[in-house]
Each structure stands twice: as C-alpha cells, then as structure tokens.
Length: 350
Ligand SMILES: O=C(O)CCC(=O)C(=O)O
Ligand SMILES: [Fe+2]
Image (cartoon, rainbow, N blue to C red):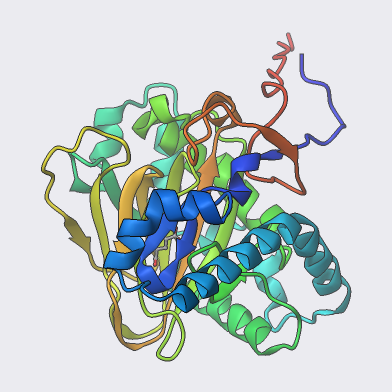
C-alpha cells in the first residue's frame, strides 16, 4: 500500500564518478580510476587521437581529476544554485511557471495522450497518431508545445541566461543550457508533463523499457550557438526513454542523427538523420546511440527530458551495466531508489 506523505529518496550510481568521462579534445568517453589504469586501458587510442607528449597526458589527467571532483560536488552545488535562484531570481515570464495548462500543449499531443490513456488504446492505434521516423529504431515524432509556448519559454530561458546567477551544465557533454529543476520548472511543468501525458504514450510504445513505470526525470535545455557548443558527439542517454523537443530559434544545421542500440550486437544499421521542427518532440530509447551535427548558423535550443523508471534501472545501471552501487543524492538524483516504488492501493468507492 502507498505510504502517503514521505517524499521518496532517489540515488545515483557510484559509477557516475568513474565511468563515461567525456574527453572532448579526443572525442572519447573513458573510465577513470587513476593514471596507471588510464594508460593501460586507453594509451593506444589516446595516442592515435593526438595525445602524444607527456605534457598532453599530464593535462588530460588534470582535466579528468577536475571532472571527477566536479561530479562529486554536483548534487550539493545544484541544490545550492536552486535555492539561490528561488530566493533571488525575477522571471521575465512568470506565466511559464504556472501549473501546466492544457493550452500550452499542441492539440495533437493532448489528443494522443488522451487516446493512449483510454481503456481500449493499443499500439497500432497510437502509431497512427505519430510520425514514425524509424520503425526499426523505434523513433517517433509528434507536436508537443504550441509555438506561443516555445516562444515564451525561450524568452524566459534567455532572460535567465543573461542574469548573473550561477548556472549548472545540462549534462557532462553539453556546456550551455539550463537545468529546469534549478529554475523551479520541474514541479509546475515537467513532472505533470511526464505523469499526465508522456507516461501513457510511453507505456504503449516502450513497455519493456519501463514506459509505464516512469517515476523521475532529468530535464534540461541544450543551447547551441556560434562560439559556444556547436555539435554533440555520439552518445547514449542516462535514461530509459528520452523526449527531445525543438524550441527554436532560427538556425541551420544541427540535425540529430541516430545509429544502433547501445550494446546491441553490431548489426549494420543505417544512420537516421532527423531535422528539427519547432514545437515537435522526438521520442527514442535512451540507449539509442545518437548525436547532433554541427550547427551552421543561428541558435538552436532544445528541451531534453531524460525519463527514468527506477524499477528498471535499480536492476542494472545503464551507464556501467552493472547492478547499481547506490549513493544518496539530491532531488531525483539519477533516478535509482533503494526500494521498489510503492504500489498504489486502489480503493473502490461504492
Ligand atoms: O542536441 C540535441 O538536441 C540532443 C541532446 C542530447 O541528445 C542530450 O542532451 O542527451
Ligand atoms: Fe542524448
């Protein structure tokens, strides 16, 4: 039976501080446990990518040690930024922080979610309402937000960016953008979006990836602009499922590309290229390898929601592919829990 009241504690996996450290200069994700291990595991590939002198290696070591330190402090620093923003930031668009109104959602999105939650819904019926970008890769697209809401959100995010408040990085590969929970947008916007609209859809589309059991998320906006991040290397997400919505602005280039599935047998799959359509969201499995082509001109802002199901990830951490070694964390952490989610006790009122 559900125990009402006590907020759930979420955790991360200890591998966060040792695995998947991204070295942009050499286009490589590495595991890092110290100098000897790095040399042993990555010496040849690092040399082939230009890490030649002992100075190069020394610099790489220093960067990795710094990144490990940053990751160790991340949860606490993020909570401190959130508190500071809550106490001193004045939004340009307070309307964006209102509890999720149906009017900000594209009518097609509302109708699709409503259909998915209806008793007779099935996958075939849902697929008729989505654009299938790849049947084999199970990648779909549909309108999510109205153009007016995308504009309002961009205005608000731009205003926050201009402020002198501290900003967290969206993830370990993107350097520019905004973490929506730090801005206070999880409770009014992202959590209801996940619970009321995304979950019914994901339950039909990806049942074996926890689509019906989503219980947390990490939501952020990535920003690409000349002189800032321009592209994103191929990766998989720390998520069971992902929603990626194009918010604008005007830009050329920056298409997403999708390869095979992480850890799937290396079959020859063709790369799929997807152009962005403002207001529309792409749905994919977190383990689908993907990246972003270089931006040509303009600015590209996308809302990315990494959707997590503790029941699935508690068994196997998607980043280290081992049973997670749990470390208590702030907020939703990385979506792991020490217990299975409470089952809801359904009372029938007669
Ligand atoms: O550039 C994008 O829109 C994709 C971002 C992405 O894949 C991620 O942040 O996980
Ligand atoms: Fe991603």
